[in-house]
Image (cartoon, rainbow, N blue to C red; front, side):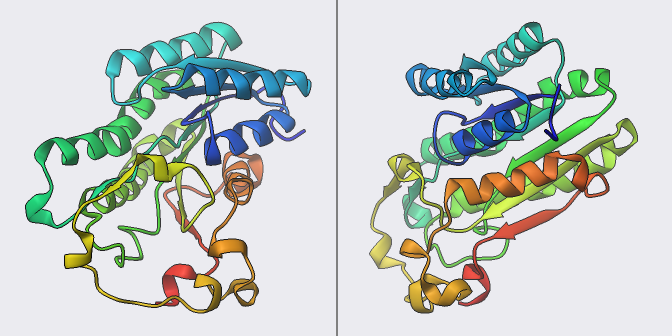
Length: 264
């Protein structure tokens, strides 16, 4: 198993891409801590991993709250003795609306979770990655704000996702001498429950009509259900990036969208 004896912390680990990544890393031998705001979903994921013979820990907390993140990292290291892998995955779509209607509090909520949360996760994890002699960080960004700008009204979300890619590149340079690799995955449409953290207000007034090709993407002749990837497909890319198979890859964003973002 390619991650045997390694310890991973995954934020947003209670569902979707985070859950799929936790399960896959655990199946490859990693000891996994899943962090998120809902203790019940985290515990369900941790229990399922343990039932399958793996080791897992649920660490509830809000990635936008410094004390929560610091405590989650500390609990992970206390339980498993080290930290080797970080998947900064927690995020929300937030409010999508005309810029003049976007409230400061709505902007802050999206940036606090998506961008500040990524910063805090890495900030508190890095000392332990250095103590372990190196490691791998993967940040979950998006095609939006990095290669695709058709989601009209998603100003806060797109800014946060562009910021994550800039952070990826800056930290790849800074942390390279400590043998810590930093990369970003940029999914397109994914079948997850992220829509529960999505709100729209008066988007029709600013929407720019555009059509995706058959099935919303060219790959597979548009036969992928709803034109979306599965959490497991993204998780396989994350697994590759945190494994030794990617030991010379850092500072790189990789789009995983079936060609969705280049077909419009």
